[in-house]
Length: 192
Image 1 (cartoon, rainbow, N blue to C red):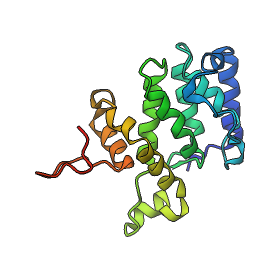
Image 2 (image 1 turned 90 degrees about the vertical axis):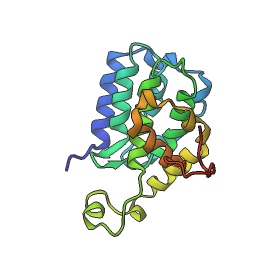
Image 3 (image 1 turned 60 degrees about the horizontal axis):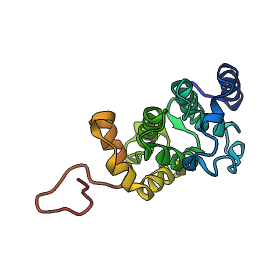
Image 4 (image 1 turned 120 degrees about the horizontal axis):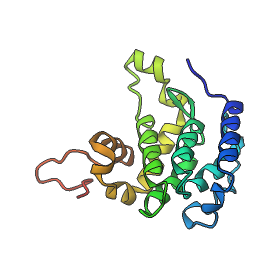
């Protein structure tokens, strides 16, 4: 299994900072990212300390695509496991996508879809699924992510399907606790 260790993540962020030395300045002071520097990112196992650099860089037009890619790698521990810091990153990303003028809007949206897909509960009765992804009890970040999406349900509900595709919208809506199908005469949990 391919594992992304913290040293590799830090080296990738250092390369990013070298390639885009002024990118982080673009996002400093943006209200959506207020408080991101107060988080002790390195206290999450396998999480690099410089997550704010990548979040700020999503507001730099030239650096946003690469910042999104590097942040995606930082948010993974392996190809099948997200980092425990993801529930803490999500509110910042959700506030960024709530502003359509953010240069890295599509990158933030892609990261949200990825997190929603990783947050799907594992069927504990399906041995192969548990073997591959681990049980939900071993990965509390899944439920924590779903709680963050539910707390930001109004943002999730307004994200346009044509920009994220039906699979992405379904993953986001399920993570937020929204219904993805409508029962006749039942409007509860449905957002139009």
